[in-house]
Image 1 (cartoon, helix red, strand yellow):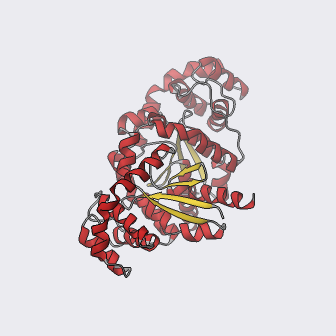
Image 2 (image 1 turned 135 degrees about the vertical axis):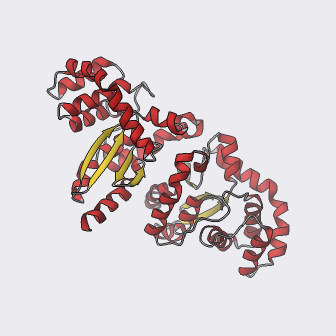
Image 3 (image 1 turned 45 degrees about the horizontal axis):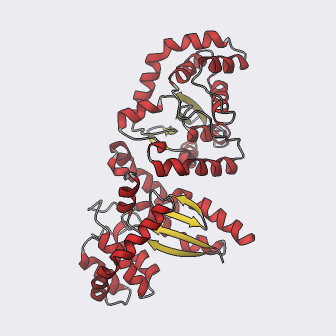
Length: 196
Length: 196
C-alpha cells in the first residue's frame, strides 16, 4: 500500500488545514498516512526560508487566505490569541504520543486546540490536558517529551536533507510536495503509485 | 459583468501558468479579464518579499513544481536558458501593446516566448520580433515603451498599495488572491459576484 509521509508542525496553519482531510483523502486513493512531526523553526533556520508573518504584506493577507481555505474545507478556524508560539515541547510530546500509539489522535487534538479553539499549546498544562483528553496520562506524556529531543531534531533534519523548506511537506517515495495547496498533487502521485 | 484583474510580470512562471487558462476560466463564470502588467521586482522591493530562487531549497524545487502544474494544465513549459532576466522593457512594451489594443495577444505571445520557447525577452530585438508576429510594427512598439515608464511604476505601486506581494495577483473588486494556485478561489468569487 502506498504511503503518504506528512511532515507538520502544530504552529503551521496550513499543516492544520491539511491534517483535517489527509486521512480521508489518502484512504480514498488506497494509501496510508505516516505522521512525521518536525520543527518548522528548525527548517527555517536550516534553509534560510522565512515564515509568512515575517513579510508584512504576507502577514496582512494570511488570515484572509486561511479563512477561504477553512470555508472551502468546512473546518473550524480561528486565529489564536498567541501567534507564533514555541512548539518545541508540543512537537517533542508528539513523539511521546507516538510511543503510546496515539500520534494521530494527539495530532488532531493539538491542531484543533490551537487553530480552532485558540488554546496556548506552548503551555505544558495545555499539552497535558490534551493528553488527558485522549485517555492518556497527560503529565507522564509531557514529562516524557524531554526524552525525544534528539528524535525531533533528527526528523527535522531528515526533512531538510530531503529538500523541505516549509510546512506541511509531503513525500510519496522520493517525490516531495510542499504546502496544503499541493496535497492534491501528492494524492495524484499516490493514486498513480497504487496503479503501477 | 464581473471583472477579474490580473497583475502579472513575464518573468513570473506562475503568472505564465495562470495566463494559459485565465480567459477561458473567466468566460466560464461570465466574467471578463482586465490585464494589468506590473513589475514584480518593484513589488519585491516595496514589500521586502523575495523571489523563490532567492532561497536555495525553494529554487531547487521550483522546476519540479512548475512541471507538475504544466502537465496538469496541458501547456508547454521549458526552463529558459536565461533566468531571471530584467523585464523592465518587456513590461513597458506591454503598455504600448495596450495602446495598440493588442495587450492580450502580446501578453500570451511574450509568456510563450519566454516560458515555452526559452527566448530571451530582455533583448529588445526579441520583443520587437514578438510585436511583428502580431502584425504590429515591432520596432515602433519597442520605441514607444520608453513613454510608459511612469505607467508601469504607477500600476506596480497600485498593486502594492492594494496589498500585493507577488505574482500573479488577482482582484475581484476589493478581494485579493495571490498565486496561480489561488486562481480557483478568485473564480469562485467571480461566480458569486455574477449571481448577486
